[in-house]
Length: 398
Image (cartoon, rainbow, N blue to C red; front, side):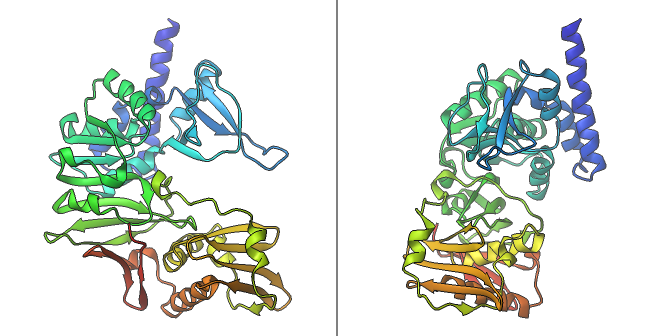
């Protein structure tokens, strides 16, 4: 009886989750709603980490494990909540039979929140008859939704972490889904099953990998998230041309994904060491660094644009000071608040903040345009972000 009760409880949770997504407007397509109602998300997350209410004495997030054995109700509720579930930190595979509390760490694998998964499939216009390449299998839950909608034969999913892929495969095959799965780096797509009608990435890239465009049929679509070392993000939906070109608009919203591991930001050392060599005399800047660091939708967008003009820069805050560091050129800048406004000192071959100032000036002069007004163009190996009232912004060479 206890087993039957749990089955019914899981079924109710799944149905309630699908209903909530539909009521929130995230699930408008009946076919995708059927997929969400059918695929049991809990089968793909035997364990995950939830943030505690308070940080530790060092200010680090405390991550508490959630499994069926530790607390069945908490685990099941989490599995059917519309949130991203962190399943791995620092590429360190957890032992869910003996889970431990973590302090801090960088998430490296997760089960993406269901509303975003179905939004991605809808944005990419994924429909029956399409062949699909999914980059980033993760837990396999999103893969299962695609299989439920398209049929397993038309779905290829790749994952850079072989252990993650093995766990996802067990869950998928255990439910009767048989997509093509492979341990592969998403930077290079998956040539054996190309070309594809749709390519959708559940990780982010500094620029569009050329292999993905080469593996997309003319007229096919690529949906991915662009990111960088300032942790600016923008989603773009590209349509592939017949001549190796592609173009598409940025999509609205504030969506972020973990970086492809080969595109992750390098460690830059101690910010104080970079500050030592800067000029002693500062100048006043008309722009606050908060314009690209605040937790607002406009700052989220501006951080991506700023990142496009200084693609090798990283940003960190120490006390009230904001530091920009470029490990590629050896350039740096530091901004501190003062009575007359923010003061900036910068040095090296690239004047990092000066370039960002120019971007902010052009953005303001153009009327502060939103992301959906920018178009990304791919041609002859180059990638440029364009707006009719602003200078073009080249993305870094992929």
